[in-house]
Image (tube, rainbow over all chains, first blue to last red; front, side, top):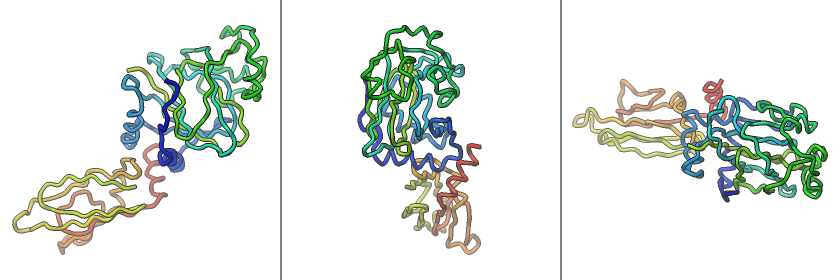
Length: 212
Length: 101
């Protein structure tokens, strides 16, 4: 399953934007404003139940964050971190809650995987922006080949990155953002945001799960 | 926007009106001679699906009992009267801040 249509209604999208506006803490990680939803708190129980009802019965939510992106990010996997290293990691669900009427947004999913949460941000020239809790790895550490990356995909989506740094990566799927529709991929798969123009319009809810 | 959950233990009746940042509940029908022990508990207040019992601090009640004419912070209702909740978006922010920091 690659997507779930109408995961959120328009009203549901607006709810998360409102919720972001009343929470006390938002972090700026250099690419996005990130707000944790505190999904495990008792006061969030009804919303958590609503989210869980959209998911397969053998998956349990481990993260719910609200992101307001102002810059395209680097390549990373949403695998395990030290805190949840014993989890059977499952899926990432990315649900747009705000999109631009003209600008299109995409998320690129690669075939390559890492069960541990890692990022190539530094290797891609993005420094420590974006991912702060994932281990930074280099192409050499991960063992990427020197096979040139798909030039057409690069020119259409990934011009914010160094073309040569993408050698060895191959594309599994390209998701187009649609308001309220969940884009789904295995947490271990590397993925990246495509470049985008309007830096003020885009927001999403990211849910990660583990198998029960 | 606002949902109230009730546990009714007896014959008290109630009518509920909800607003964007408030609610009003009229409790009536209690006979103090025959049903002395009847009461209603307002067990939960939901605002936009968030369970926020802190909102009880923003409640008042005017009753028909002269000794308990004006009450505050009310979740236990044993008199006929008008229960009211009024708050602001800023109050919601402060409640969440207190819970999370």
